[in-house]
Image (cartoon, rainbow, N blue to C red; front, side):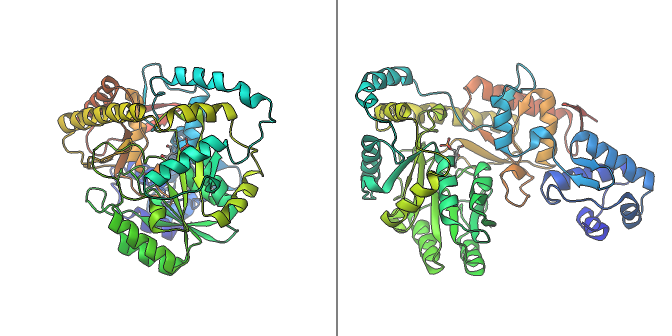
Length: 479
Ligand SMILES: Cc1ncc(COP(=O)(O)O)c(C=O)c1O
């Protein structure tokens, strides 16, 4: 990056003192992704000339950025944009939490939109164990999944208005693994894949697996009612003619929007015009929190679409069971791609899923629990953070919140000092941006959600607009 380009990005910044203004500006540009990770920053000399600040000021700013984790210095090579370990994309964070790396005992971790297991799961495991012996005489090798589960999934699609042959279903080890299989099978290096932005972060890397270049299709106004900017999507499709288009029409993560049938029909027609295959992630489809009729599955409007499903949200993420539903002519390619790294999904977990997937009582329980938590979180935010704006979603697991001012990246860093871990908007962005937004999942118990909001509100009342934090090792301190 040239010093002129950087100076344009920075624009005006508070110069009293220049050191603090410049550091804050750079940290925000890196945190929001406007300076992409790994970018080599201009030399100290060049930037001091371009911005008319002293060389000492720049040296101090670069040293501080490195200490805070927003840059790395490589001897003889220069200074490169980075993000602190715990601000990396969500999948890295979740791996770290699985490894037991937590800031403090009473920290509230709102990074993950996943709940504890559904009540009654232990007895489903017991019932599955009783059915296990009849499978033990086989070699257990079923790359497309247990026939009973494939048939059950097909039956549920048919009930939703999408006739499905069990042969069209391949059971996978979760929706993310399913997305990775699709990317591997259907994209070649240099192809383009269109992806919503903001979006569930882990699919960003999964979609790149086949070598595709990602093209972002921005969602519409997150506080409005339309959800998808279909004019923008049509234009992006025409201009970039992507091979694949990844979308989450059912309670989009993170915004929570549900795509209406008329929107699905229009979107599907646009995809057909550019011969783009839809990759439809229905991970959150079952998490409807109102009694309104659900629209038809996207694939009912777009017969060539590939649909991905999962039990993670409805039952438990620990099961690691999902599936792909694809047109007959694509299934073989998908199986071949899957066999490159995985011979199938654990048979026992599939038996547990058979017990629960179509259990209306289980589904009603999950919905009631999440509805209550959504309402408690929304009420707490309305009372304690009245300037924060959001649209109450009709389903899914997350509130997407707009801050009245300041940077969400900065706030997220600072909130760690009060024991709240929350992912800022840029984590959900393909190309940076969305730094006025935060995602809070309503998956934790109500008291915990209310306590998290209390901590956030107390922090914001003590350190309103422009509060800045400095990370000092693994601890952030407020300046
Ligand atoms: C839209 C979306 N897709 C995929 C996943 C991952 O699902 P799984 O646990 O089935 O891999 C999630 C989980 O957060 C999600 O929200």
